[in-house]
Image (cartoon, rainbow, N blue to C red; front, side, top):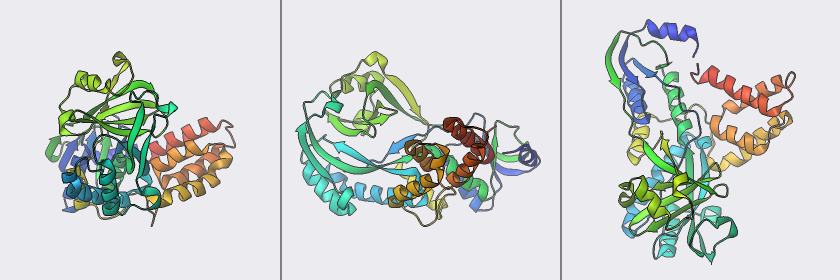
Length: 359
């Protein structure tokens, strides 16, 4: 946001200002805006721009979870229609309970999973690249879940808010003429990253006693999250003690991290109350299944800049339609800069300054 925009904000009157809003508060701001209120969002700290993926939890852990699982699956799929470029398919190994094959078969039928989304059953010796798992045999199902980039969804919601008449200030002077000032406090979720090398896109959900844990790959390290109510009450020591029953690692190397963006089922419901069209970075008339072909199509245009497909794919899933402008900028910079990595670092930084309130 440029200085001219900031000056304009400083002279305006607002009905409500949200200070450091989380996703739920942004949705509240959009709702007030839809009802005709003048709303301002103020961020006292830099926005979190790092990718932060949340894994869907749609597989029914127990038979009585099926009704809830069906509703949850429908909510996630509706969200994916609003921002398909922020979503990627994720295969998850579930091996935590009895009768899991039966549950998977019923779930495939109810979710209408077919072909590459249908569950696969496994009962095999532990693969060499999963040697950090203590159990010698890996048994369960490989189930189709999804991961969504919630930190980028946060940015997309901000763009939606601004495009529909809202104002955003980042580390700037607050206008004095505000009727209602709401100082937001976040209730963030915590997770733990273990010093264990894991394969890309690894995801595993399993159970210790009544506690259920989810292990996912984060930058080639192993991240562990608590899933159900029995495990969510555990403090760090308890989580690590239970994890040691499953994974070989040194507890003193575990790093606690804060997940600043987290989508609850209630948050999903709130999204659909206030938003009824695709978010700004989404390609028109696309679904998740179109992402792969579309990313290849865009990469075919961009590859002469020297960027690799894995690196390009990250940007494609981060910026959506913004990738077209970024490709053009990369070609412009090729005339002066020969280092592809430096070119794309500059392109991304300039894109954020221009469109994402970076100062």
